[in-house]
Image (tube, rainbow, N blue to C red; front, top):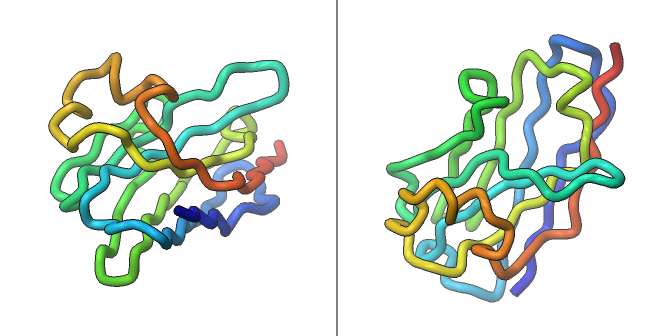
Length: 130
């Protein structure tokens, strides 16, 4: 299984970026997909997750209303559209496959726990300047 994250870069406060994660080596449509982010010295933080079908999404409170997660099961990709970015969004962003079935993402403690995900992309750096 390979997950390739892309789309990171430098953007000013208030700007937008679109991250993409391309998956291979798995039946993509069987997996819920999540995004996490991490800054130096901090734990990996849950950002959002989307169900295998794409019908359900969950977001962390810190990004709700600004980020939109979507997927294309025909192209094996999941995209994170980020808007109204702030310096607090600066981090390395990772995509990951959920271990369990999509319905387990209903449980907050499961979807926010990095241990609920097994395959991870290499990360893409997002830097938001003030």
